Length: 161
Image (tube, rainbow, N blue to C red; front, side, top):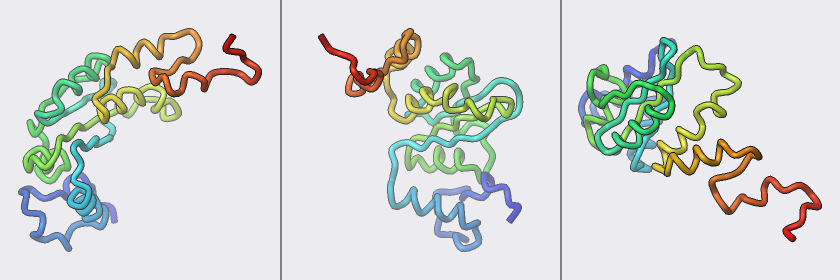
């Protein structure tokens, strides 16, 4: 409907007010949050400029700072200067769950987004060890950080002997 969705979230934690006046996508997100009650939400969006940004609520600060250091992104604390009506402001103010906004530079090559940012997104979601993933990415042959997939790189006929 031509409405900027990330200014349509409730300003207070009382989502029952004017819920029917909100856009269907916003109602869907709010309903999903209420039903699923996630521990952490990763909000992925774009930002202007050459440098990305990661903003995090207090419970996700350290993992967000680690990702910023790894990617050379700017770190911001939520709610900080986030605008009223944004998902970030709503979740960090209501403290229903941790929230991390991952703002990818608009100049990033669209066909390489997962290759560039996928590991960082997984780390933000799962709060895993960055060094393990970094080590896995630097191996000559494409290695996996997860030992369960160690046989995924074997060619047919390879032998364990």
